[in-house]
Amino acid sequence: MWNLTRDEQLVLFFILAAFLIGLGIKLLGGIPHSPGAFSPSLVRVKITGAVKKPGWYNIPQEICVREAVKKAGGPLPWANLTKINLNFPVREGEEISIPEGKINLNQAFPADLAFLPGIGPVLAQRIVEYREKIGGFKSLSQLKEVPGIGEAKFERIKDKITLER
Image (cartoon, rainbow, N blue to C red; front, side, top):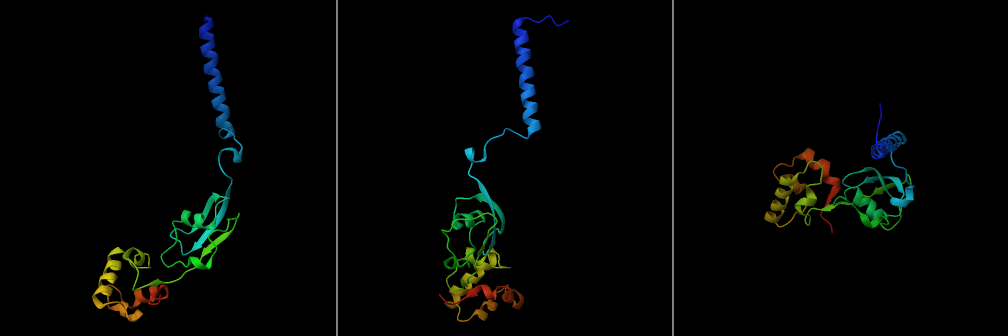
């Protein structure tokens, strides 16, 4: 029934061996390797506060807080990075909280203002144009004179803005 030549037997053997190896890898969950051999060991840290994408991250344990903040999308324009040590190494299970500062309303770029709650790119540009038109804001409440910023929106952002340097 199976009159196979020596060459055909070898081909069949290699096909069967490849199938069994593949099945074994599939059943074991992949090709095993030592964790430190191909990639650095990862730690799980929580990044909160004034970052663009707060949350839990798996990052290489040898990186510093500065790099961890980059993994979270980078700091928001009003982040106060002078209050933390950005060169400190991260540790497993650590929560890194980036403190908030304030955006200077008279110096901010539209891209910075667009990160404020309820302020998009169009409204941010409108704020900058109004600032240039009036020669700079003299008080925070003057912001309510910009079309599109009412009392409710002003209340949401007033703690994130300043006129001081």
